[in-house]
Image (cartoon, helix red, strand yellow):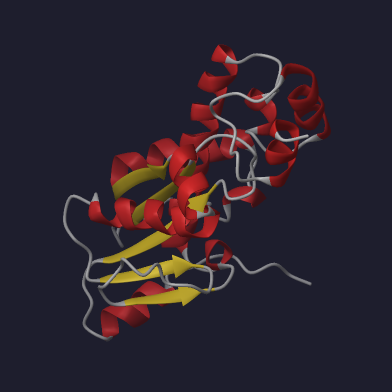
Length: 206
């Protein structure tokens, strides 16, 4: 099966419906046991779409890093987070939506239409929008948002790994890898762990 390559067709369709500023929105970090959830909103310039945009998971780290810098240089980009406290208080889905809402609100010029990765529109987003399942592999604007969000969050986890060595966050980004789960049992729970997530909760209350 040939994997689709993201293109600008969703954006063009929105332009034909009269929307001028179309933003792609995506988040990263729902699955980890530690760290924030991070979202990005990106409005690409139709004349300067970077080559090679794709779902961030389909790209090498080197390619992601290069594209991240190009996107920041040629597009309107906003990045936002929801904290571990917010994740534990609200639940991970609502917190990831909150991060998306904050990312959209942070754009220098408000967009008039959103292309949102997934199948749910965050309830705080009241402007025109559409959801696109697997959008990061179908729309270049969402691809760009997924790349920026992933690089930003990975860098946060590398910084946190220096403060809390032993959990392997510099390589696992807080996801529940075998070594991370083992470190949780041996080293205990840090302030950056999500207490509402079962593996962390179980260690706290065993």
